[in-house]
Image 1 (cartoon, rainbow, N blue to C red):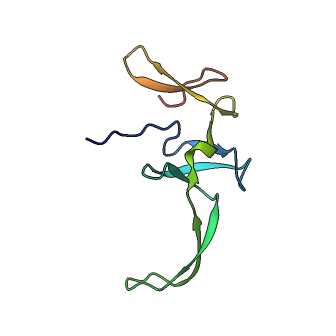
Image 2 (image 1 turned 180 degrees about the vertical axis):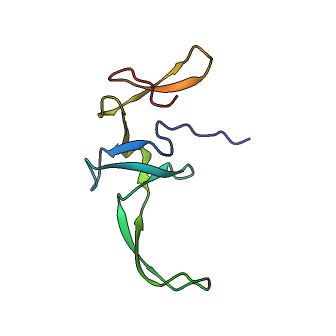
Image 3 (image 1 turned 45 degrees about the vertical axis):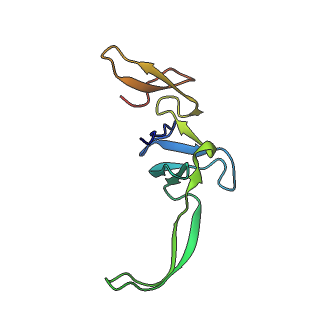
Amino acid sequence: MAVRKKYHVKKNDTVMVIAGKEKGKSGKVLRILTKKDRAVVEKLNMVKRHMRPGPHSRQGGIVEKEAPIHISNLMVICSKCTDPTRVGYKILDDGRKARFCKKCGEIIDG
């Protein structure tokens, strides 16, 4: 049985890059690549790919797209205090487990 990996970052989170060539920039997580511990962030880490035209109306040429960034280089941005923060976990009154901002204590996902 495979163990499911847990990350401090989820899809649709707003994150800031804390290391690498995109350091200091922020964007929304489009998808998580669990096998490589990476995330694709909207409009960050753009690379150019030379694409051949496909059989079903895909146009060829040089295409710019987002490349994955390692999850360790991302920090979640709190919606309340608008700062990059570490993420903690707590059990809510109704029994659900939720992430919270370590700086201001605000629940990140409800």
